[in-house]
Image (tube, rainbow, N blue to C red; front, side):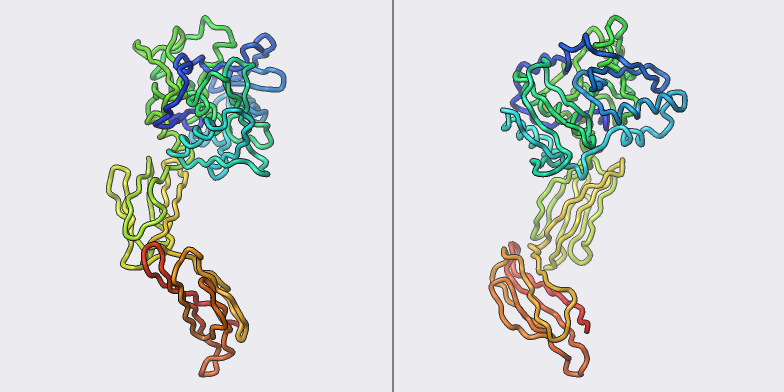
Length: 429
């Protein structure tokens, strides 16, 4: 199903506690009380007029979506070349206009009284995506969540990760959890569903009777990518009205209650397919991967195998009693990579110097979660040991006078039983 990748939306299957006020959705209009001071700039994009509203030093392409001056320059550059046409492949254009959050991590700061609801919105998005929300410490790029009743609605001050911008998600007091998710998606780089470039195949829009302040909220975003069919149930969709009806007739009600199937697909296409399943297995585990193109298992030779089960499910199965850390990797149709590290057989870490010198002393350490650890060495002598460390001295020479062959083994009880791991360092003079 769909999704207007960068300009589209997504949401989760279960925003359960939205306020009833959201049912009437005010079309996410932002600076209602500032319309008189607005200046509208008209550009030619794909040969058609495209409006950008300016209030002071701020620029809007919808009343709850602000763009940066860099993004404004992208629009200006489209106007000045190729007769206002976008000539590159659409799937390549969105990355010029929208910057994704690096590694899918959105750093945040909460100055709102609605912290618990904001964190709930984050959990909703994380549950179906590769996006992670991490509270800001000293990161330069982050979003501040605030309370703001001055504009009559909630809004996002920027779309996507704009370097150096003062990024804000402002929450109107009577709008609930669904709106928080909606505005957070704007901050992640998503626009309204009804503005996708192919919307005319699904929706008849008539803005002839509207002034600029209302009409520009229905204009298509030509630098975006659409996936699948337009999703009337998307949480990013405006309701039908005298301005918008279905092609051939018909209406729909907008919702702020849940992520639609299309929303989830768009989320996975943009930031990578969500890999659902345990990070540990003693024998085998089934993984669900939403909307992948290719799926592989890496670093798994002799450790585990991968089998496709169909219906977006894959089985990772341990080989014998072997153990190790393997990587389940998914690449979607947009070449966005998702990975999940899986601990096969209760594998544990065993660390120490990979290069040693004859006669010198070294310490090797086992993960403290491992129990009943014993050590054995070759080409060295054990000087001392604790429950999870061993201190060795490398021999000066082997029995034949050559450099010693050194190996240090640790045997312990992990979550999956007894495992032995060995380190074989290089010996150099």
